Amino acid sequence: MGITESLRHFCRSGWPAYLIPLAVSVYYAVVMPVSYDEAWTYIHFTHKGFITSVTHYPAPNNHILHSVLTNITKYIPLWTDLLKLRVSSIVANFVSLIVLYRLVSAHYNTRLALAVVAVSSMLFMNVYYSYMSRGYALYNLFFISALFAAFNIIKNLRVRRNWILLSVCCILGLCTVPTFVYAVVILHVFVVVSLRKLTRAQIISGYSIVLGTALLYLPVVWYDGIGALTKISHKMGMTFYQAAKSMPGHYLDMFRQISGVHWILFLILLGWSCFRLLKTRDRNDLTFAATMLVLPAVILPIHHLVPFVRVFNYYSAIFVLIILLPYTNQIGRLRLKVLLPILIGIQSLLLLNFSRAVLQFEEKDLAINLTADRIIPEIIGEKRYFFDGVILCTNLEFHLITEGYKKYKITDCEPFPLNTDTLSGYDYAFVRRDMDKTARRTVFFKTPYYNIYKIK
Image (cartoon, rainbow, N blue to C red; front, side, top):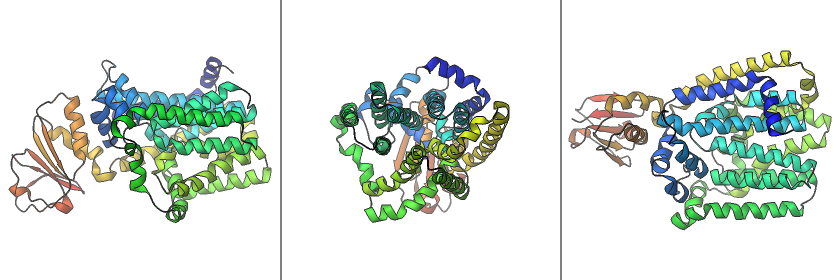
């Protein structure tokens, strides 16, 4: 099936189920305020230009390929600066739905493909990163594309373009976020186990991925040194035993954070489907499910690391596919007019859940997103700001830059006990409440995490 034909079939086969996640992605891209990570990306990479984006790696926040794309989309006329930042994620997410549909329809059936796309696209983490200006939508796209290539290789390992697609997607994924290395290992182990052998083509693919990734990261290594890419591992490192002991909790966190529902419900659905797969004894399905479910628990202790759950955000599609695999034939026999209302109902429930959960999610980490959006219009201007351990300064600076202010001054300090009664030379001071020793000055605005004082 060609790309044009697949896209036409994709749109006709239950198009409302695809339109809903796209509409949700666009809606939240328009209405949600800038997040801390987005503001950090804009200030340090997008605003400073292409060269800085490909050479500077001060923190893992630089999802290099995503930063490069924002250096292109920032020139779109008429749109807001935030929407320009987010549009590449919206596009990448929608393309990933098309690729996921092609994958499942090619190797199972079109009804199952519709179900997997409809449900996985509305899980919490998928919706969140479908509009958030981070590299995870690209991350998801490259994993699903590489997985499609892996399925095709298992079906016919002699087709060269599948090996090329697998290698290119792995390189681009690694260029987006270095932790895509987990996906690379998982995909290649899946191919080896399915084929029951390590082929010459796979060895060449592995070398190509290493070489291609090294070349793309060469500017970073030249400018910032190899330590810029490895320092996050050193900061979060632990022993093999500590990482292994953390695996059960990490899996439960994956179920909860990726789905947005209680981990018990997700565990029951996944456990029951695995039981059904064991009963059917389909070797291909069992190999896929076992490889995908077991490998993170093997790789992470070997790496002596338990990363953030968002590193595995591409597992939204994996989990849904595994849950639905035992019912492939039953779903395939359903008429579209029966299946589609069921899927839209599930999507609606997941959307309601996301709408509730995202408000709580955006208020974590010292209330720097939604609360910041209410504070900043009251204090923005050509003013001087003092921050005592309050990272809202990043969100504020994003607005100062994008709204054209030039003569502002931001002093950002590590948290220390501060009495603002003795502070002068600033218009506003932001002080963490656990560090606030102010006795007389009246609080201008307060949150559960910090107080804001108007100094002048």
